Image 1 (cartoon, one colour):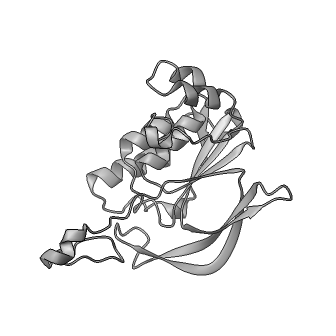
Image 2 (cartoon, helix red, strand yellow):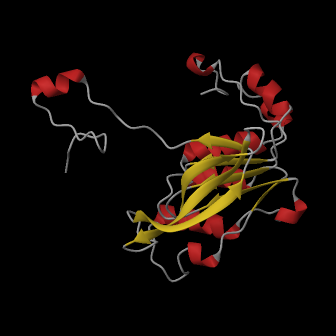
Image 3 (spheres, one colour):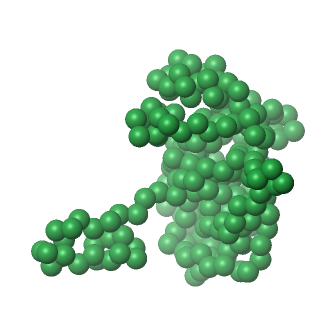
Length: 221
């Protein structure tokens, strides 16, 4: 909303000079787009309709490493192949390879869309991490528990609880549950990209239309 110039976000002023590591919590298309903006060479953005305010802020950015973190796995992430492929092909940017156990085995039978995504994630980027000035990663099975500050009250790290997926880690609708194991990841910046939760219209109750407030949906089959 901020870098696309939405008026309600014009007052935001993210400080991208606080450190070289940023964490995006969420793994949908918007999360990947935030990572893309943070990692793109700023000159490549000047010809787009991104706001001049954002260009000025991004030109001063010290971010060189971006983590895109989600509580579930590769088969449950909401991003599409177009978004992840664009990040893989970003100039001067490397992707941190995924551990083999986070991707379905080669013999697994997948639908066309997830099969293509797995192919992109397996292949990774053309540049290796040591060869590129900037890099990004997909960090799966992590649920945030706290933001941790340094002595100056600035963000120092984020604590995450490791999760496990059931009934199967490669089942598209698998649910995540905490394991109790906590890991701390260094980060000087954090961005939330976890989607939205719907609220009922006041008239729904008057009309007798049910609404599940916990899930933010009208009950349906």
